[in-house]
Length: 234
Image 1 (spheres, helix red, strand yellow):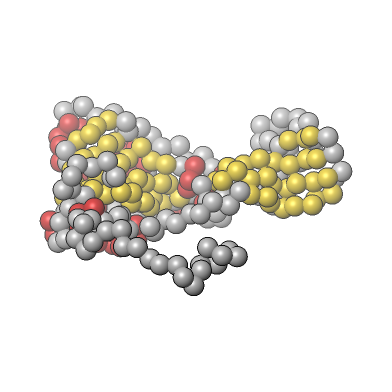
Image 2: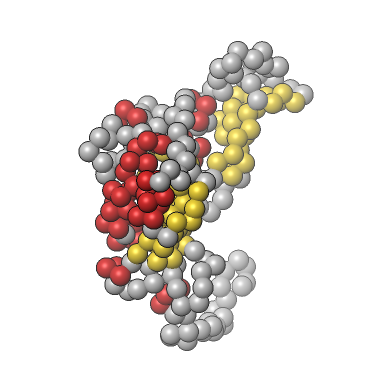
C-alpha cells in the first residue's frame, strides 16, 4: 500500500486451491436459501399450525386465517457455523412485524420463541430436511411431527405472544414523553448532561446512536451513530 492505494508492484497470492473448501461449507445466503427452502418451511408450519396460531395468533401468511391487522411473521436464515464436518445447516429465526403504521424495523424488538434447523447439506434442495425444532423454550424436537405428537399428549406448553407495540419501538424524530407519565428530568427525555440533551438508542444496523442531540436547547444533530457494516445477505 502506497499513499492509501495498492502499489503497482503489489502481487496477489492464492491462499487456497480449487476444492480445498468443501461445497457443504458454503455460507448461508439469506435470500436464496429462504426461496429454496420455502416449501419445506411451509410444510413444517402446516404441521405445527395448531400450536403456532394458539401461541402467536393469525400472523402467518401461509395460513388461511391470516389477519394482517395482527401483523405478520417473517424469517431470517443463519448459518450453523458449528455444525459437524461434512454437514451444512441453516438455522431459521422468526420475528413478528407489527401492522402499519409501525415501521418495519420494530420487528427487531419482537423475536418469536421459535427456531427451525434445516439440514441443507445436499446440492439438491429436494433432499433438504428439518433436523430440529425449538418452540416456546422447549426442544429440540427432531421434527415438527415429533413436536405435535408431544402436544397431543399434553407435553407442549403454549406461550402467548405479546403484541404490544408503539412509537417507542423505533427512534422518533422527537423523543416522546414516557407513556407511563414519568416526569422527565429535561424536556426531551433521555440524557441531560451540562448544556447537552440527547436520547441514547441501540440498533443492529447502526450500533449505538445518539438521537435528537441539542446544545442549550438548539438541535445540532438529528442522529449521531457508530455505523457498522451490516450485510444481511452474506
